[in-house]
Each structure stands twice: as structure tokens, then as C-alpha cells.
Length: 300
Image (cartoon, rainbow, N blue to C red):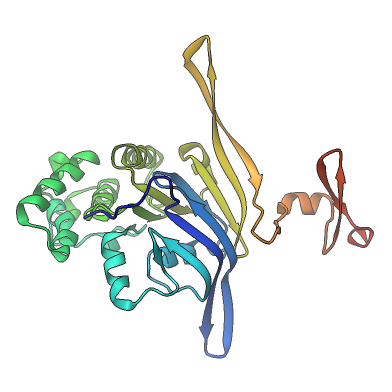
């Protein structure tokens, strides 16, 4: 059921990605030349304020929205040019979706194991294989003892864990999660992130989480911030190990400003406000470093 992808090649590559929504005579650019590369097996988060374009990116990668321009390659599929018939197969085999609202993830009159089996029935998996795989997935998310319960008989956190199993039913290489912890408490949120971590380790699944919650930094390997429809900054996990005591280690995140293929970057808004930077800056190369400072007219 899985798609064969070379581990050395990125799973997701977006270059100068543009998405324009047209409402009557008005056009709104949700994505404005976004660049993003995601390796297979990553556990990462896309963060940004409301209207930044993060949900639009998720919809494009999930095959729910067509890109307007640029390039969006996922597992070898060109989402700008993909035929409609191939797009159906793409959504069935390559990508799994988890919505924040559990009502969008589960069919209320089916048990947990029946919900997990639904995508496999559509895919044509044999009854024996789909039952075995559904049991394995529910055990993986810690719900082996709840597989015959209806959604109404489970807590919100349990329903969301069933939704994770549903998203993995056809063993897709990419799992997209839209605010998966937005409706659960902190303890359940930590449990869900632990599950995402195991999925990347046990199955090589790439997990992309879209959220406005910036505290996810401590729970994922990489955080990409989107601002005004473009990637703005990245935070990467760094682990420092004490060579005298291998069990003594600390994880931190380093933040980088993203440089696109045209050499453009977005300065952090806090730095712009602090230095009163407006439309123009002065740039100098000083002792092997690039120095950016406000232009005189920026301070007027």
C-alpha cells in the first residue's frame, strides 16, 4: 500500500509556491512564493498567525486545493499538473489527514476498528489484512482495549488517537495534522506528540503538524514559521551530549531566517520594530559577515 520513495530524496519540495483564491472580482494570495523542503521521516510543525497561509499549505499538500503557480512535489507527484484521476490515488495512498474537529475524522456509528478499516475498504485491501493492520494501528496509538467502542463512548483525546490510526490506514508516507491538539488537554497533547514520534521511528512516516501553538518547538525536530504566505524562519533541534556521561544530554532549538531561491529573506518583525525598519535597509559585508542596518529614511 505504501509508495516507494528513496530515503535520500526529500518527500516534499515546494518552490515559489503560489495559491490565489478568487471571490467574485477579488483575488487573495494565500501563498506568495513559498519555499519548503521536507525530508522523509521528519516530525515537523508549521506555525503562523491566522491568515499566514499555513492551512492553505496543508490543503495544497493534501490535494484538497490546487496550486496556482510554482511547484509542489510530494513523493514524486507534481501537484500543479496532476490529473484528476491520479489525484484521487494520491489522496488515497500518499497522504493521510487528521482534522482538529473529531467529527470530521470519524464516522459516529462505526466502532474504532471499523473506522480504521474504512480507507482500506475503499483501497481494496483484503478483509484479513485490513483487520490485522487496523489492530496494529490501534495498539500503536494505545487503544487496543477500545477498538470495539463507538466514538461517543470515548473521550476527545481517544477519538483523536483513533483519527491518527485512520490517517495511517493506507500506510501513507505523509501524515498531515491540522491543529491535532487544539481540543485536548496538555497531558493528552503530550501523549499525541509521543505517538507522532513513534510513527516516524517505527514506520518512517513523515508528520507535518499545522498549528498556531508555538510551544510545539520542544516536541518536534523542526519548526517552520510562515508569515504573509512565505516561509520566514526555521527552528532546528540540536542535542548536546556529555561525552563523560552519554545519558546526560540537552535538546535546544536554534532559529534561522529562511533565504529563498532568489536570495530574499524576511526579517523578524520584532527586530524590524526594535530598529524602526520600514521599507529599506543598508547591507554591508563586514569581516565575512552580512550586516543589515536601517537606511536613513527608515528612521524618519
